[in-house]
Image (tube, rainbow, N blue to C red; front, side):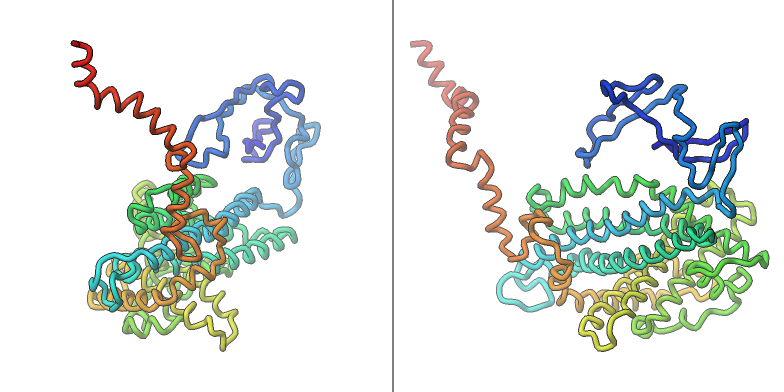
Length: 492
C-alpha cells in the first residue's frame, strides 16, 4: 500500500492509498521499476523487517486506487461521495494511534511491575529510610526510588483509563463519519496526535527509568527490560515522530483560539469546552480564577478544581502563543512553545479521561479511595514537573510558596501510595510468562530465579562448562601461565 499524491489532468487531489505490487508472484523478483532492499540491523525490534523502496515509472491499474472516498473514471473524471472531507484518510492514522495508546499502557505495565516488585524485595542499608524495619530496608522505602517509580504507576493507571476512553471516543467519531458527519474528525486527529506523543514518551522513558531503578541487575538481560526497551523505542518515532505530531495538536488548539477571537462558531468538543471556559472571547480573563488561589491541599481534594487548573494552564499557554504569533513570531520560532502546549493539552485530556473513568466505579467501591489517590498523585506530579508553567501564568500565577506546597504534598501522597504499590502492579495481571523477567517474579523469589536462569548458561552447566573451560585453559591461559617453565624446558 502506497500513499501517493493523486494527480489527474494536472490537478492534485492529495495523498490517496494505492495498491502497488512489489515482487513477481512467479519468481519473487522485484517488478520492473521497483528497487527494494533491507535497511540492516537496528537498535531494537529486529524481528520486524524495515526496508527501502524506490518506484521509477511504475504503472498499476486504475482500480488499484482505493476508491471508497474518491473515484477516478476511465476518462479521467474525478468524483467524491457527497459531503466527504478530503482528510478522511486521517481516520486510518487515528486508528493506528489509538492502538499505540492502548499498547503503551501494557508496555509500561510490564516495566512498572518488574521494577516495583524488585524494589520491594531488594534490601539495602539499615536505618536509612524513614520507615523502621528490622534489618536492611527495601529500596522501595527510599524517597528517591519512590519518586521515580510511584508516579509512573499513577501514569500507568491513567493510560489504561485513557486508552479505553479514547477508543470509545474513536468509535463514536467513526460512527458519525459513516453517517456522513465529518465534523469530529479534526478534533479526533489532534487528540490522537497528542495522546500518541504523551503515552509513548511516558512509556519509553518509563521503561528506562525502571531499568535504572533496578540498579546493576537492571542492566542484565534477565531483567527483561533491556531488549524490551529497544523493541519498544520505535513507538516515539513511527506513525508520526512525537516532535512533529505535537505541532498537529498545537495547531488545532491555536486554530480554535483564533476562531473564538474572530467570533466564529466552533464545534463543541473536549478541547473547545475548556478553551471557552477559560478564554472568554479567546482571551485570558482580567482577574485570576478562584481555583488558582486555592491552597494546594484543597486542590488535591477537589477533582473538579484539578481539571479546571489543568485546563486553565493549557488555555493560558495557547492564548500566550496565539498572541506571540499574531505579533509576528514565526512558525519556526514557535515550535518549542508548541511542544509545551501539546503536552499541557494532553495532560488535561489524560486527567479528564482518568477522572471520567473513575466515576464509573460504584460509590461504595473499596477501590475508589486508592484509585482516586492515584489520580491526585498524577495531578500533583504534573504541577511539580511543570512548575514553571504555573509561575509564568499571565493571570493567576502560582506563588513560590504554592509550588513548595505541591512538592511537600506530592511526597506525602507518594509515600501513601507506596503501601499499595505491589498490590497495584499485581492487579495489572501480567503473568510471569509474559513478564519474562527474573526480577519481577510474582512469588518474590528474585535471587533464586535469577540464579536458576544463570545456571542455564552453557558455561555454568556441568555437562558443558568444564569442557569449555578446559578448552580455554589449554588455548589461552596455560601458554601464559607456564611461559617461564616452557622457556626453561626449551633451553634444557
